[in-house]
Image (cartoon, rainbow, N blue to C red; front, side, top):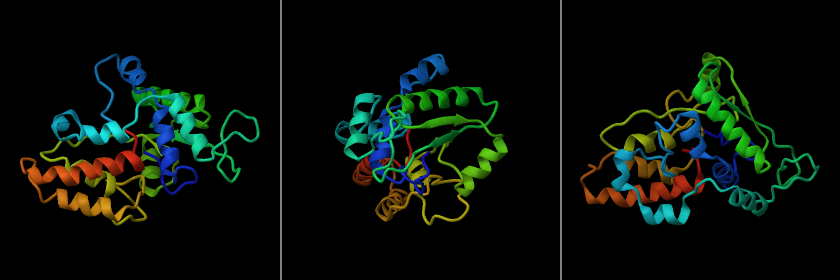
Length: 224
């Protein structure tokens, strides 16, 4: 989860570059020993594969691609101006990000290190930090973080639950259950609310779902 109120992380292009730097295959095979598989780029769980708009994924989806990540950074004006191996903002300001996971959550800690290594390999300065679980929760909820790992584990009877988690409005000082990225998009929230009124068997559900998938893939409020 990127904190979209922070410099660099407030740029969808930068968030997409970060997403492309993450080797989800290594996380699935090495950290989890192959008992899981990499997430669909949309973030939808396998139960909803039939509702994934493959045309949207083909056009806007991401995968592990360091060259694509580097190209996105260059396109956005993120270059290494001081020669330290890490890019700065287009204004020349240092980018130094921390990814927090709870101490002792060894699988998350190891996955976070894979993420940090991948980011650093394309020139994004990310370090893995492991505060206490209580501190992670507090910082995630009050927005005192750069990047945080968070598990959306509510497999419900509708994909609405996931988009409510991503886009819920209004954003408050404390975000305790959703939209930890503090990402604001009125269209996405209206579509999510519309989604909540539709049965998964209703063909009308696909139009708002496809648009929500497009927004989530181009804007990257979270990186599945």
